[in-house]
Image (tube, rainbow, N blue to C red; front, side):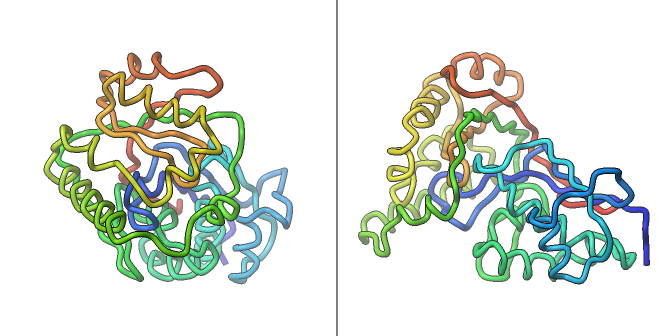
Length: 270
C-alpha cells in the first residue's frame, strides 16, 4: 500500500445561471489531502468520512485554500479528495479513478455537477453519468465576490419549488444551450443573456441581497456574464483577465474579490 502521496482537487462554481445541476466550472484554488502530516483532520470532516467509507486506512491530513459554505464546491472537493486518497493508497492514478470517483461522489452529494468539475477540470456539462468537457474558444477568468456569510446547500434547495412553469423551463433550456454555445464559440457578447435564470436564483438571492448587488455591479462594470455560484452566497462572473482588477474594484464592501483562472487539469494524485 502506498504511503507517500498527495491529492489535489479544485474548487468549483456550479449552475452558472440557468444550468441548474448541469454545468460547473473548475476554479484555480484547491483543497489537498495527504498522508504523513502532523495534524490529521477530524473523523467528522467530509474528506475523512468519504475516505473511511471507501476503505481508506490511517490518518488523513486536509488543507483547503477556499472556505466551505460559500458556493465554491467545498463538500464536493472534500469528498472527491477523500475518495481519490483511497485510490492513491492503492497506487492508482487520478485518471484511472475518475469514473468510479464520480459515481460515489454523486451519491454522496446528491448531484454530479461540482464533483464532475472537481474531477475532470475545465467547464463540464453533466447529465446522468455522462460528463463532457465544454471546449472554450477564448481565455476567460472567473471573478468571485466572496462574502463572510455562509449558505447551507440543503437549506438553499428547500427554497426551490417542486414544479416550475413551462415558460420558465423553456427560458432556462434556451439560456443553457446559448451558454454552452457561447463558451464553445467565444461569443462573450451572448454571455450576459446566457447566464440569466428563472428557476433558482431569484429565490436564493432574496436571502442574500448583498450578493444580488454584487452581481449587478459585476454586470454594470462590464463582466461578460454573472451568476450566483452554486447555492451562494458567492457571486461569480466571466471576465477578461486584463479587465478583472477594474471590475473587482467596482464590487461592494462586505465581500472579498478574487480573480481565478479556470482549472484545466482537475483532480490529481502525486
